[in-house]
Length: 335
Image (cartoon, rainbow, N blue to C red):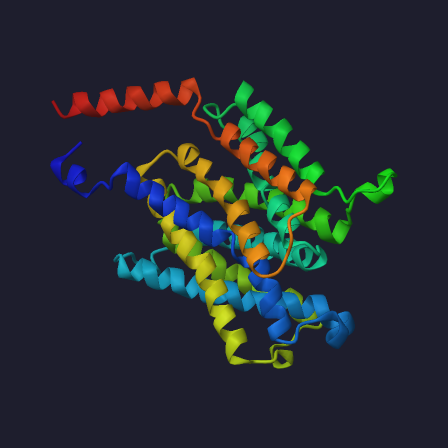
């Protein structure tokens, strides 16, 4: 490792702080989206059959602004945001359609159809479980270990418990709808697929450039879908509070992505992913501060999901050995 690289490589504590901040911020949109919708007059009683279309059309602005913010950051760190070849454009468009258009189509409809924000926050963590399963088949060095399997089992138990409402009959005990909890689980699967695609594209294209363009492209298609479903920007009640919330939500996409990809440059992604357990805690705490209440089932479900994420992301003996070999290789090259 060169002296220059040593000099500019951040400490482990700095990397950890960046990952923690990213996941704290990522947990905030769940409740803020609902608050913003109410502030902007995006409620079923006023919009009727156009309600979901209006939700999508409005939230597409969040990702468009977030994309602009991310590209501005890329320019600040002196990246050429237009240096994208034909193949990379195709990949970025595909990623935009999956990670922004499709994923947030299901996320936003699911989120508004689930009464409890804490439930939404917990269910969104299904992306960790889907990622672990998909990675097992996609990557030779990321197979399911005993701790990962245990983590998956505990995590899915946590998701089930979080949906318990009480009652004596099965139908009374669970709250599940296709367009609510079902859509949030579909979002989890799409987000996992998008992460795998980002890993592939990121090997040839700067992460910030890739993220900025995929957010912008994906948001445009998301707006078209919302428009076709009856959403109109003219129907938004543009209050100062609503605009501020929209900008905050855009930043809550742009900033975490920037911090997360920055941290990933210097650390093993599997190791820093353990900090994702902070996301459901952050989202749940904010929901409680804004008026929601924990139930026993939600609290138990949240604890189990966080435990499962830690187990799934524990470095395996294989990854530790590979990291040790890589360190020795770097040391030998610099002798």
